[in-house]
Image: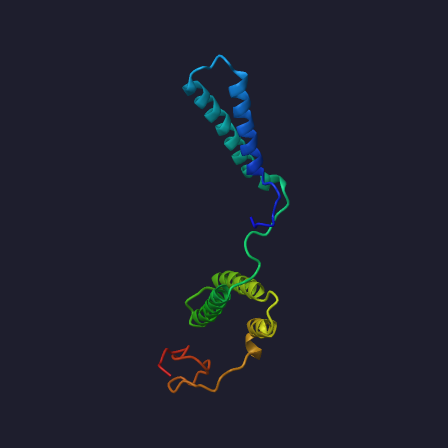
Length: 181
């Protein structure tokens, strides 16, 4: 709460109400002449006020409209973490495609996993692209690379010396025979 914000909060209302209730109970009951009785009565009423404030705080999110929690600005550390996670997901997609080409992954398993990974990548790209300039173009190119059919993707000229299979430009091993390139 800033110094210019003078609105009353709900917890303040419950505390003031508890203090007023405790004071009224002490004045109202003249038969409690011992201080222990008065203190226990006051503590009981204030505890009821604190319980009311806790109940209000618990039930308020259920009836109020959804609010964005936290700072709407984004830190560079958060963006870097999202970028790192996006690179990892894209690398996982590439490794999954390699494993499928090597025959390590069944077609049905591949289809299921690649759909989940692509959805995760698209979600990350959308989270990154919130008002940032230049990211839209990068995301569009990343998505275009993911959605291209295999036949239209660029094939590198890197060819295996043993089996003459064409491999990706960044491949270190042949995808057919496993020989180091």
